[in-house]
Image 1 (cartoon, rainbow, N blue to C red):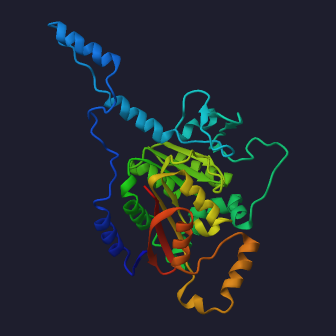
Image 2 (cartoon, rainbow, N blue to C red; image 1 turned 60 degrees about the horizontal axis):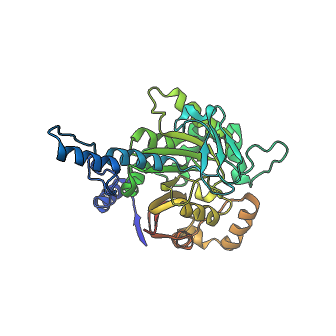
Image 3 (cartoon, one colour; image 1 turned 180 degrees about the vertical axis):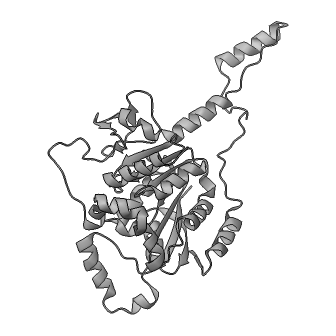
Length: 356
């Protein structure tokens, strides 16, 4: 495990950039690279024409088509949260914030249909249920309140810097980008995105082929949509808002290049169930980056802290981490390797990847 402790966050940016310089993956292959596919009928026909006629006929390389198919595959990742089989689009696939109201998807196996509303797609297991409903633990339900959704970027998130040592969205984003260098150009899921603070940064950066802003809270997703509407010239293409359960992610297995979870790990009712799902959907070599806080140092001297943590978790549904090795063990148990982390007080940013 690699750990970096910081007093000045800029030092970490320098270290991370030096480490990550040689770790880019091969996402930007030459547009006109020779196709590895066997000769097609059209290719052979063109060769015959060139051999038997004075008219010189050139065929277009298949690499342009390959590139389009690759981009399509990086976007067509949505799956039924019940069967985990691909969803079929009824109509043209809409990978845009504005396409949600017209979206109609159906599971290729169980035939359940999923629909979008004005702001987001609803891909929860209970989507479409008219009588049945269920509540989540308090650590999840609190973020479904309209007031909390409204306040999240109007003081709530900013307070993390005061009590938790969070560096702030801009510096955190720079750290995240360094961890994600191997998968730039691919797709990214911003899990438990809240009001979309980092989802919007990912979309505006232009570094990803598709950004999925995912949260269980309808009101958080509505707030994210409002922020997008208020921002002039926001790039709405290649960004979709999805309501889903972190423990039943609506993506096909091995289809996602990166998953980010900002200040969320401690709020998940079962971090192991969530990270196992993240491991399932990541491609080989895919990267998981998350931030949370750790109560170590002087807090470790608090008597009965471990049993107290268990009681707090049972009541609130949240989880308190007491050491970096707990997070490393969590990632390893869920099939992720290469754990590393950066500390700033109680703040910790972790990264791990799917074995390639």
